Amino acid sequence: QVQLVESGGGLVEAGGSLRLSCAASGYTFSAYSMGWFRQAPGKEREFVAAIPGVVADSVRGRFTISRDNAKKTVYLQMSMLKPEDTAVYYCARKLWTDSAYSDRLRYDYWGQGTQVTVSS
Image (cartoon, rainbow, N blue to C red):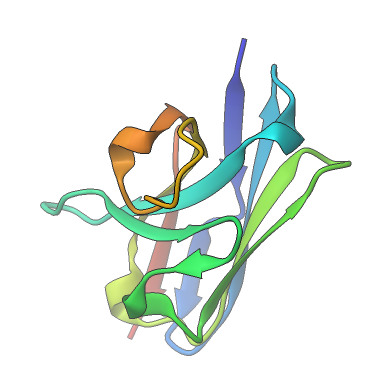
């Protein structure tokens, strides 16, 4: 069965960096695009980034998405972190092969999430 497992979250000071990882299993990893979303308390889940390198305006220039097909892993490199980046971060598999990367409905499997907390 398809599984996505995130790791790498934690507590970091503003201006710091973190790298999130999402290990995939149970399907042909290279055949699908992948994305990262985040959800802060009391807010809707929002798009962060997706392969092939699309990023949300709020993180452009600070976050980078990449993948390693041999390791079946997608990464989210986050730098210059801000307190407003605090959220649970989720990776997801994109089912639809279109360019609607920010549409949550285009994704069919989700990980359990990893908490990122940025202190001011």
